[in-house]
Each structure stands twice: as C-alpha cells, then as structure tokens.
Length: 160
Figure 1 (cartoon, helix red, strand yellow):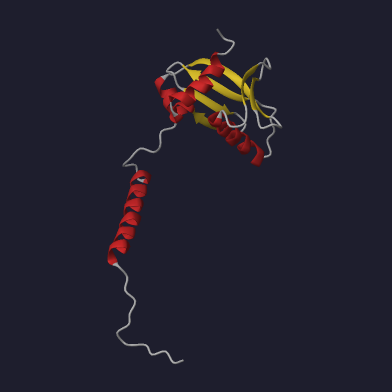
Figure 2: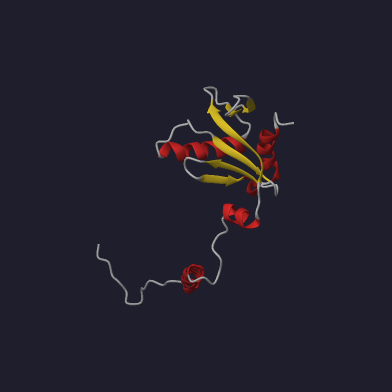
C-alpha cells in the first residue's frame, strides 16, 4: 500500500489551550519570583508567630501511639501509661492518619518510639501535636473544630 500525503494535510494545534498553559506558567513564575524578591511574605510559621505574640503553654501532655494487631490505635499518656483514647478499625480516622504520618516520618529516618510525641495547648486556644525527634508539627485547628476537639480531649482527660 502506498500512502499518498496530500500537501493540504497538516497538523493543527488549538491556540486557546496553549495560551492558557503558557499563562499559568508565567503567572506561577511571577508569583514565585515576587515572594523570593520580598514583595509578598513567605508562609507564616506558627512557632514564630506564637513567639512574636508572646503566646505561652497553657497545658501539655506527652503521648505514645500504639497500633494493635487487630487494627486498634491506642493513645497513652507517656508519663503515667494511662490510656487516653482507643480507636477500633473504622473509627478515629483523623487520629490514625495524624499519628501514622508522624510515625512514618520517624521510621524513614530510623528513629524509634523511645521519645514520646508532644501535645501542647497554647493560651490562645491553639493546639499543636509535635514530634521532637523530627521537628515536625501539626497545627490541629487547621483541620477543623471536630478534629481539634478529639486531641483537646486527650489534654483534658485526667487533668480535671
């Protein structure tokens, strides 16, 4: 079979998608450059903002997270060993994902579970879960009131 290429056959690119893609790339570059050059502030760092505002620790607790064989996640006070919460399979999704994320950060760095996680309630109402071994923190209010309340209950349990 002989293929006859007609001189009128040509490949056509629609200009609207190309212009849109180039526009997104240019805008992204300009925004990045404007932050790098100081026209816009960089991302706020909660610990720096707290230090500038003079926010103090209102309460804190050291936690340990345990993944049971049956899929239950158990949260214990690292000092007393008291069980603060227990979440069976299909429950406690936010606690599970948050704890597993922090534990994963330790695991990939070869860090064990010897040092507990810190849960801090600040006097401005903010709540932070932190890992002192990796310097990772989770600002719990960022995930909504109901998710923050789950960890706030862990701070309050046994301190009444």
